[in-house]
Picture 1: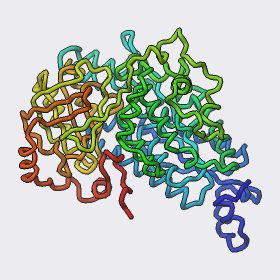
Picture 2 (picture 1 turned 180 degrees about the vertical axis):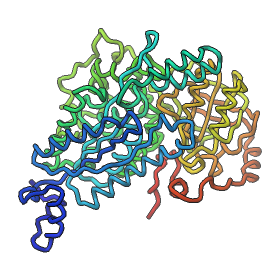
Picture 3 (picture 1 turned 90 degrees about the vertical axis):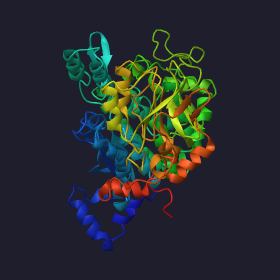
Picture 4 (picture 1 turned 60 degrees about the horizontal axis):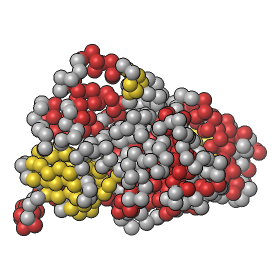
Length: 561
C-alpha cells in the first residue's frame, strides 16, 4: 500500500493522537489507522425519486469497503429535484446546486485528507457536481449512479415524467380531458430512480461509464433492481484496488475520455445539458475542450439508439439490449472511440469491451447497427450567428422542419412565455424568444421543459421555434435552441431582439440569425442598458457574480486567479 494522505496524518506519532482520538469515537480501532480512509459521498434524500434509494446503496458501499480493508466515512451532499422545481422560481437553484455539490465534496475530502471517494448520486446535477469535485481533487474516485426509474404505463404506452408535462399542454389544447391528465400524472413515475428516458441523468451516467469513471453496465440499471446494489458493492471493491495502485482521475479524464463521452452521447441521443456539464468537468481537470468539439464529433457519429424523448424506448430497454457497452463496442469497431483510454478498473476501454459483440442483438431495435442508424449524424448541433456569436445548442434530429424563419415573440421570463402558450397566443411559424434566463440573468439558467412540453402538447412542435439563453430539460425535443451566448444579461444580441423581428433557425447551416442589418444591431446595442440584478443577497446573488458564460460550461471558478 503506497503512502496516502490520511494514513500519514493518523500515524505520525504522539503529536497526532488528538486526530486518532476523534476517529476512535466514530469506530476506529488501532488496526484501522493503517487502512485507507475512503469518503462515501451520499446524495440520499427523499426530495426526489432519483435519490430516495441512495442510502441503501451507500450502506452497501460501506460494507464492501470495510470488507476490502478500507475505512469508510460517510457524508451527505445535497440535491435539487429538477422535475419538481421545473417551471418555478426554484428551478434557478438547479444548476447552482451543481457547484454546491462540487464544493461540498471537495471540502469534505480535502478537509479530512481522505484517500479516495465513492460518490453516489441520482438527480441531474449530482453527476457533474461530483465529477467536477473528483477532477479538482485528483484522489482515487469512482462514481455510482443511483439508477433509472422504471417506466409507468397507461393505455398501452410507456410513460415518463415528460409525459406528465406534455399532458398539461394536451389538456390545455383540448386534446385530453381532466381524467386522462390525472391518470398520466398518477402513473408517470411509479417508483425510485431518475427520469427514465435518455434525459440528463441517464445521459451523464452514460457519459461517465464511457469515460471509465463508472463500471460497465452501471449507467442503465434500474434503481430498484438487485443488480444496482451489487454493482455498487463491486464499485467499492474496484475503488479499493485503485487506491492501492494509485489510479487517479487525471489519468482517466483525458482528452480521449471526453471524446469518448461525446461520441456515446451522440450515439444515444443524449441531453443538451451534457454540453454544459462536460465543458465544466474539462475546465476542472484542465483538459482543453470547446463547444466546437461537439460539432466536430457530431459530424462523424450517427444516432444509433431509439430512445425517448424523441424516440420510442426508455433506459431500461437500452439496458436489456446491451447497454452502453454495446453502444461503445459498435463505436469502437467503427473507429470513433479511443480504445486505449484508461478506466478506473486499470483496464483500457478496448480491454473492457473485448467480449462484447460487434453488432447489436438483431431481435431488439433499441440499438441499431452502424450501417442502419436512426440518423447518419449526431443530434446535438452547435449553432452560431449574430444571435449567438459564442454558440448555442440545439437537438436537430427528429425535427421535421430543420429551418424556420418567422416573427419573434419575445418574453422576458419562462412564466410569461408559458402563459402565452397555454392561452393560445402562439401561432404556427412563430419563433419564441425567452431571455434573461441565462447563468447570470436568471440567475441559474433554468430549464424550459414546461413551455417546450406545452408547445408539443398543443401540437405546435413542428411549426414553432424557440430560442433561449436558458437551458432545456433532457426531455425536451423540437425546433428549440438553448444556451444562447452571450446571454441577454451581459448584452448579448438576444437582448436586442424586438417583437416581430425576423429570426432564422437553420439547423442544416448551423445558423441562428437575427435578420436585421449590422448597423441596426449596433444601434440597438448602443441604446441597451443592463437590467438590475434580480437577487442581491444569498446564493443566487453570489452565483451570478461568479458564473461564466454557458459557452465555457457556466463554471464559477474560471478566472479566480
